[in-house]
Length: 406
Image 1 (spheres, helix red, strand yellow):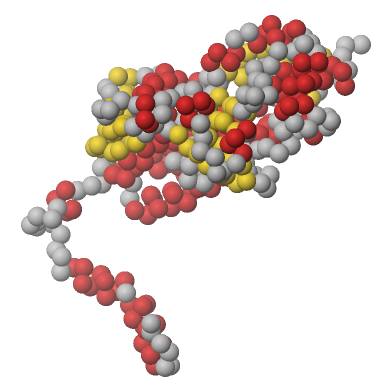
Image 2: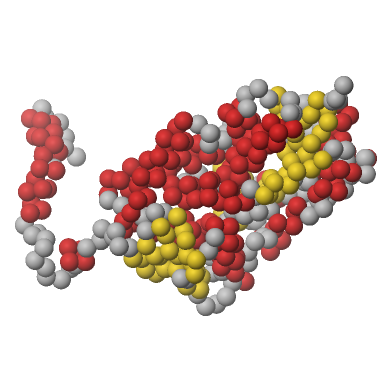
């Protein structure tokens, strides 16, 4: 009889490099490896040979980079979704399309299980598994980190060396990294102590340090249509190419470093350093455009939605009714978010340098400090009297009852 098949989320990193032989040793499965290409670049080189040599029957390398941008990154940009004020959700956003493709391959291959290499301490196990449960609830999920006796990355390296499996790290250079088109994350080693300043000259791979950036600023103009970026400096770009160009511009100017201690979904705090050069520029530009195109009530309520949207993405709840409902609201707010934003990039900073839109709600005739005939300043007295009436009534009551007013 044919063996049952398991689909392995495969990156060729330390974890998944040893999972193939571990699955062969502990389960009677045919292992089919799947690598989701979300823009990790050279990390995909040589994966097929490595996967097959370590026991996989085949390897799928699925290019889902454009889907990643258009269906996941752009909605997050439209939402202005930032987790805990710093994290632009690079890993979080990528897990949903990767897990979705794992399910699609599992259905195609007739697999009975999906395996991932996420640790029992991390968020990614939740992100993968919630997506699988939402799209294919019948599939079994195997998470080796919750089963095997290996307790550390050092023990993983020993396991690999004992079986002659090449791995991309050593015990001396053992940062846990995740890379895609949107960002690169760094965790572990000296970063585990939040008092330690990151060794940026050692860890940065997508960008220069601010100190190394040019001494002259770079100006960039980004054009949006309904909240979606379409042009850089007047030139139209396809989605993937647009992010690549912004990564280049941000990287050259030291833009996009986030060093944070975040609250993981699984209950602990963790420290990570994130490189998101293009994303930092794009978020800044989109926000500037919304400042002139959204009314006060919509913008303020959208800020609440953005926080919840970011939390849902971080928690792996992309394929949920609430996320879909919030996306519908966000998409409606973007109907007038079209125009051009100019930014000044200088040594790690992103500064606004101009914004324009045919849907701008900014009216210079009303806002001017010069004499105008549009805004009658006397009208504000009645407004303030009505706006402050509840305060006045409450103060009168307190005074009547002998309470202190201050």
